[in-house]
Length: 431
Image 1 (tube, rainbow, N blue to C red):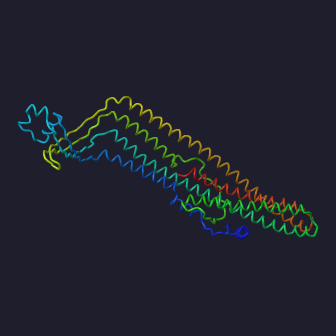
Image 2: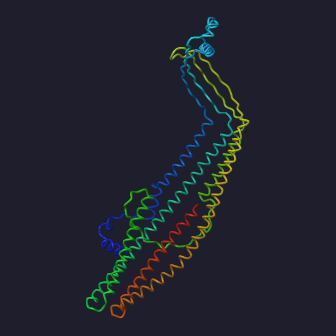
Image 3: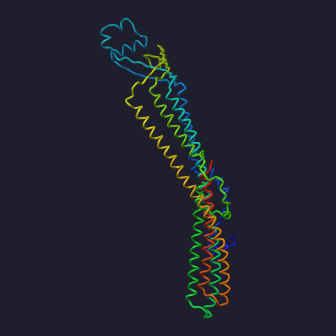
């Protein structure tokens, strides 16, 4: 096959004779597992879920803040309060005229505050939901990696088929070129008609067109592999020959613990926690608070300190039906995930059964094509021998050559199809 490809490359000029990079399937899978953007996106989603989980650490940790405020007012009540907070009250401050018409009173406030959550049952359920989302994201990442592997296997198999098509077309072109030279000599000697020569030329041009399409397919699937591997487009890969894989399939049913199924099951559990958090939002909450405040009439003054500390119990007894509406929304979203899970299982069960049937059919077709190729090759050899003796027509030889090429292509396509079907079954039944 390598000699035929080399001959075809030379026939089609330097554009097709560019350097190729040898690539094995194992190497393609390894590089894609590292550089695939789909896997990188899944890893980003997993890290995002983990970061959101750590956001819930705030339910245990205190919140501390410092504020600095400058204000001025001539409001009688606020002005008196400011003087009181500054501990500047004197007997003269109680004069009616001063109480009723105070001048501009300024205050500079420095406040340190502390809020310590003590008991927030709804946040505990939210934290459980966030933790399960991390688990679901991990399963989804695993499934993305399995999909990338399957996609690389499919593209690699298509590239192998493109090379096989190139080999078949190159060999056919070589045979047709030999036939053309023989018919040309006979035409020059007046033994055949010009129509025979034209028939060979037409078939030769068709084969060249098929060869060009095969080279285009090599470029197309090389670029597809480059995309999956995160490499620049334009490289052409030399691949291994198409292996005839064993069709033995030990697993004929979908595993219940497949990563995407587990991700959806965890998502169902997430909505259970969200509904639990919504119900708990009606329960009392307990939080501790404390502050220390400095009030001073001068800028950058830090006098007249005072503290405030306490524990707050809050209970939202009625929230305007908000809890009921949120519960209904979460229930519908949970039902949607359950339907997605059931639909995916049904679709994939159908796909698995179809793939197993295709595998059985492919095995039968391979046996038939193998026999047909041997018969077509023998028929072509007989007709070529008869043609050299002048006992067979050009049309008969061309028909036999076309039949052999079609059987070889059908055989290669069936092998590639079976290999892709096996990869698809491995993808469907992956753990």
